[in-house]
Every structure is written in structure tokens, then in C-alpha cells.
Image (cartoon, rainbow, N blue to C red; front, side, top):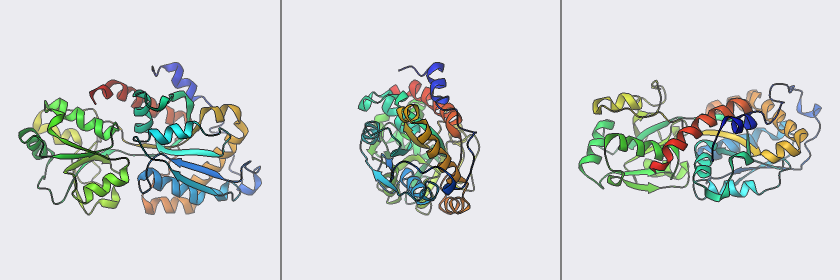
Length: 332
């Protein structure tokens, strides 16, 4: 499919409410018209999207009038099974989705998986933007990315890489090898269906390296060594390592810096169109939740994102990532 300006404006302008809603106390709002809200996470429990969903489920009920919010995990196919299941649910506001739309939904749509259509989804907010980091277990001998890549070049099959098939980390690894003229077959690719299992694998030295979301990987910081971060500037406070193109400079190549997971709160586009009043109640409650001091304290301690980008800025960010994936995804 073509992600043209018309499609982008349709998504970005899906609702007029974004900045106009007030922040009245939850009890002053009209009651939410459902006795519960389900949050679908299309990956296994324990990953970053799951952690984010469970944080929302803990604090959103108070802003919805004390209705329960539950998290349901439906993993498989790098998110595709969950995305497909979500797209077939009632579009009345009783269910929403918390997922890394970039890269997993983008990848699934571009690959033609699950008969998914980009325009069937509306993304309320990109709450947690991440970046990729190249990690090895501390038991591995590699102190630099250059040393690791030289071993991949010289010893085909020796190095393994943990990836989620079709995600931005996988694509970043393949692009880097292509730029260096190293056959991707030189790497033993070990696939996982979610960040939680992949972090467990690299922390347990079950794979040599991984390209993984950085901000969601703080839980394994003591078991791994960072070799590079996919950023324009370093982030030594979190991962003391050179930027990816600094690390590749001795090898005389540069690679595109793909943005990592943008974890979003999303709904069906038909819900926005058919039930705008309910949609506005959900967004207003969610925005109040993001501003709650107890939520912000909880998110800071757990290193969970709590940003408000809103529909338009979220759509613009996703459009940029979509175009990069459209260009490079055939290399997988």
C-alpha cells in the first residue's frame, strides 16, 4: 500500500478533540458507558508493552469512574495474531490496544500479514518512544562493535543474534551487514516473539548479540555490555556506548538510524468515527491519568514512558517510520 499525504492527513485528523478537552475530576465527567475496559497487548507478558499496559491498567480506572481495566496478552507472529484479533473486536470503546506500533504493526501491514489495513487503526498517543541498543552478554569477549563484526565476517556461523522477525532491530542488523558486505547468512538468527523472552536470552548468554529496544532493557543492565546505540547522540547515563555510526567509523560505513519502538495506545478507526463521544471520554480520562502525580512517580521509578504526543504528532512519527520500513523491508 502507499502511505501518501492523503492517508497521513486522514489519520492525523481523525478527531478534532486533541487539545480541547478539559481536565475535570473523573467524578465530574459523564460515566464511561462500559463496565470494563480491556487492553490488548499483542505480545507475551513481561515485555515493555506489557509493562506499559499494566501501568495504565493500574491508574486509568480512577479516571474512568472506577471501572476495571484488564490486560489480555495474545502473542504470535511478531504481534500479527494480536493485531488481527484486535481488529475484529467490537468497535464500541470496550477494548483498546497497547503495542509498539512502530515497528510491529508497520511491518505486519507492509508484509501483507493478517489481512491488516493501516487505515483500520487510530493511534491516540505515542506514550513511550525508544531507541535500539546493540548488546552482548558480559561473558562474551567483544569489547567493541568492530571486533564483533570482524568475527562475523571471518567466522561464518559462529555468532548468533536474537531478533524479533521483521522488527526494526532485525532490519537494522541486516542493513548494517549489507553495508559492510557481510552475508546475512554468516549470522545464526535466533527468533523470539517479544522483548521479554529476547532479554532473557541475551541475559542468559543464549545468543551472542541482539539489537533491542534500549529503554525497555534496563532490567538486564547488569548482565550485558552495550556496543552501540542507535542515536545521533550518546546516552551514557543509560547505556555507555558510542552511537552506531561512531562505532562503525573504523569500518568506513554509515547506516540509517532507525527509530525503535513507539509504544502507543490505539483503538479501531471505526470506533473514532462511530462513537466520537465515547472516544472523547476515553482520551480525556487517559490524559488525566498521564498527569496524575502518582502515575508519574510510578512511571519514573519503573522507567516507563509517560509522554503525551497526541494523535497528530503520533501519526507524523509513524509516517516517517513507515516510509523507512517501506524502503528497507525487502532486504529481510
